[in-house]
Image (tube, rainbow, N blue to C red; front, side, top):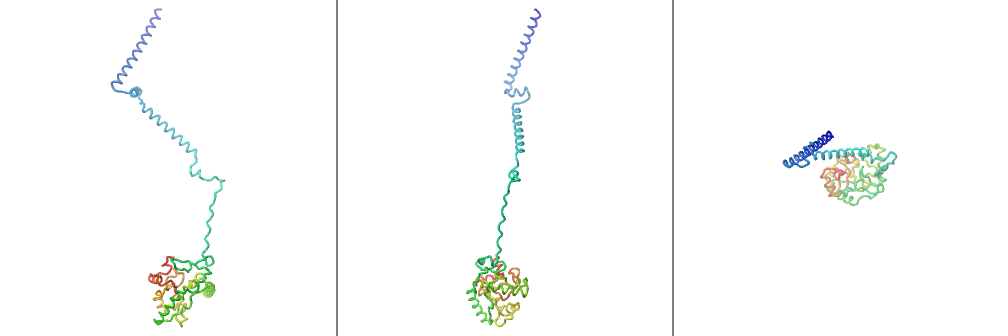
Length: 283
């Protein structure tokens, strides 16, 4: 009995000592908080070595990692944009039909002649309609007559031996040249039907009266009449249409007898420029 009482007293003393120790520790902690102006969070940090801010930062970083992993998994499960737009293998793909080829410009397919900057054009690139038949241009004929009189006053007798030619007439003329010289050579000095300036009624082949041997011949360039025309034709609205050294541009060899009426004002400008009609008009 006495032993049991002693044991109870020892346990009581132990609990009293433990309580006193806790009370002293708590009092010391509160004193430290007051003395150093610590907050409870700082006290916890001092006791356990981890701040609440570090705990929050760690949680925030973990959430970011979780979100990144989620996005990566989602992106891997979704098809790429360019792949999603591709049609399925069995899906029909509409093909754009090819544009209709433009019909070639030939005397048989065009309905109107071509004008560039107000000038009627007939050459190897710009044909005339097969049915285009204006006849000889009256204004061109009047200007030629004026020029003929001026040449006569200077001692030269001119004659326009070939002016307007119809489409059908050019067929026969061109075919005869091809038969005599072959097509390649004929194309250098004779226009194919529908491509001749003579069909416009504005082309004049001019020679010296009584000197038929020089008509439409390279020898005409050495005659006094050819030299006078080269210097004065532009004053009456005519230009030398196929000058020397310009075959690659005009498509025809030098023809000292072939003149084209384009009006006095424009003829003067073209003559003074030293350019062919194609060069001057930029075609």
